[in-house]
Image 1 (tube, rainbow, N blue to C red):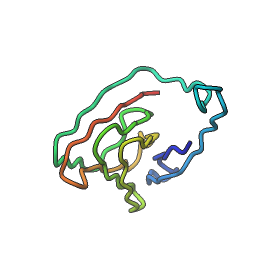
Image 2: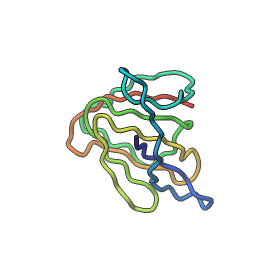
Image 3: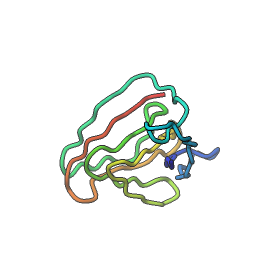
Image 4: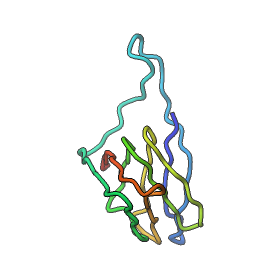
Length: 115
């Protein structure tokens, strides 16, 4: 299973990186990873047309997209759009951070899992 990571390099510039999480057969339950520790769960709704300027993540956290789209731009200029089912590991707690907005003018629902 692939997770997209956002991280800051030593100079504070942010980048995307793909990480593979190993999943193994678990019988009738399908394929599962080893447990991943998280602190809590936060449900979030963003209003239609949201556009958040450059900011750092408040903590290392997974963001799981439930509904809607988000376009995220990182410091090296790359932009990616994430939709339902996408998992993003946000680790750019220092540096330039990232910007996020609604690429289609609609709201979104997501699940935040701080580490």
